[in-house]
Amino acid sequence: MNDKYLFSIIIPVYNAEKTVMRTLQSLLLQTFKNFEIILVNDGSKDNCAAILEEFKQYNNVKVITQDNAGVSVARNTGLEAASGDYVIFIDSDDWVDSDFLAVFHQHLYSDIPQPVDLMVGNLKCDRVGDLTTYGYFTQPEIPAVLGEIELSDNIGYLHNKCYRKKIIDDFSIRFTKGISMSEDLLFNLNYFYYIDTLFVFESASYHYDDVENSLSKKRVLYEELLDRKHYLNDLYQRLLVKYKNGDMTRFSTGITKRKLTLDMQIVTAMYYTTLNINEVRNSIKRIKEKRYPENVLGLLNRSEKVKYHVMNVNARAAYLVLYMLYRLRFF
Image 1 (cartoon, rainbow, N blue to C red):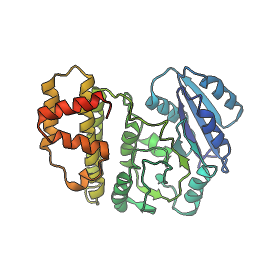
Image 2 (cartoon, one colour):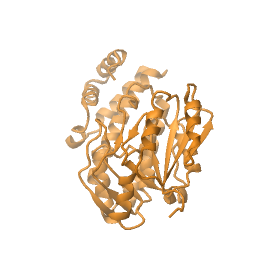
Image 3 (cartoon, one colour):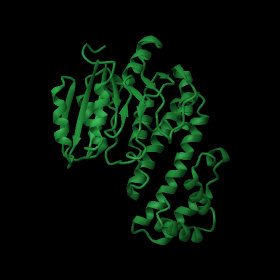
Image 4 (tube, rainbow, N blue to C red):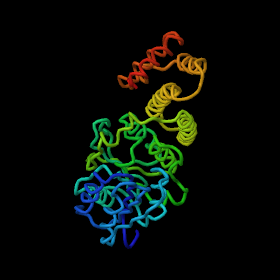
């Protein structure tokens, strides 16, 4: 183990002057003390620089300032600077309970063989279901557990997970540049490919600010969504090959649902482009021609179900209805 720090906590910061103090104060109150905080100021235009400057007085705090390059690059910068044995990612508008690190430490040294490649806990977030499968798992069992993590919608979050730094370094795992949504999911799917051991525990000490972190109103470029689909397909197929002898049924169901919702997002994003009507109709037609099982459709939320059923009527009518809903900002 590292003689100095067990955990490296990486926090990308961009225009978070209203929330970052709460985040940092919650870390200063940790009962477990063997950790470093790496703050990456990603070109903030507000008072973040001055706030972060105050925290330089603490020996375990590093402040890095860079030109604005996005959250993926900021996290990659933090990974380059991290010296701990394990890495934890925290957002600058969230906060943690005082036992957040102590819980990871307790499980790491009390419940499981050393070293463990990934630890996963629950998340205090209304949009995420609780995990129901707990314990220590090795290669033969990991596919089924990944399915549980996927179907509870925990798979795309960084914040309730603790990553082994050696794996990140040995396999050069980084966040994908140019992706502003689902970058967490892509990182996780890449990381999962390399793990041999996994520990899942019940407690939840991370408070995810569902309002501040909401991406539902952010406009995502059509081209970026296509890139995201490409990366998702590649990472998913790689996991399928690795775990071809394992139970990937639940994981496959969750990923199929993700592919469906991504296809629908792509259609919606077309309204921001210069694509002609026929191209949009053809995309709707392709979704319509696919046959999704009921267990996949049952995972859709209200908005997604409306969009899916609209797309399953006449393509011309679907285009007009979706356009009206788009104009009303329903999606």
